[in-house]
Image 1 (cartoon, rainbow, N blue to C red):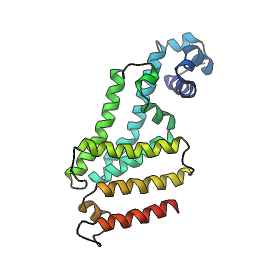
Image 2: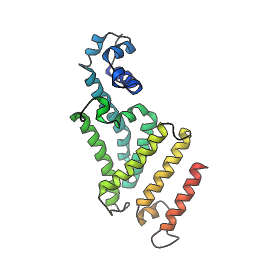
Image 3: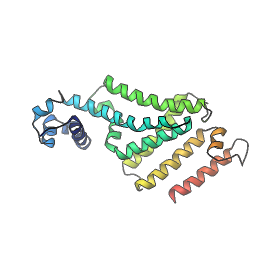
Image 4: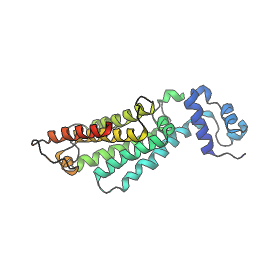
Length: 227
């Protein structure tokens, strides 16, 4: 039976996420694939090499989604599209998404290997670029270090997705997407400028700072999401 590296990665991920490092042995992996251990060693020299490739593949898969946002026309469109693509990736490939955010100790590493760290840094830089161009274009306030703004937005997105993936929200996927979008919009409006409010159609009905518009949009969208 001919096997591909993609087959090995897929089964290795299932073994690891279900049973941890102890479950992921070359012997167990070979048995799951229905091949001999020597057949695996033609593709990977060790279990650690399999682990590294699993995490790299998770980041590669993520990149194929979020980089689609670069085709959008404006900084704001690219930012919002990136959030949508990240959500699609997480819900379509929950195993890969989970692999991206495990600590190095979970893989038996003292730190991320250089090639894994490079993928993680590239992903981080992609999101910082989306935030920075929205600040430069006048959509987001630049009141603090741009890294703080990016971290706040990442924590919001990742937190919601993780809570949902762990079964702590009794929502269908379609309903969760609505909730996620409404919550992300509230976050964006809270960090946004008056220019952003105008472009999303809020207007400035209730005061010079537009705070009444933010409250109105937040309350409306919360009701729409939760019915």
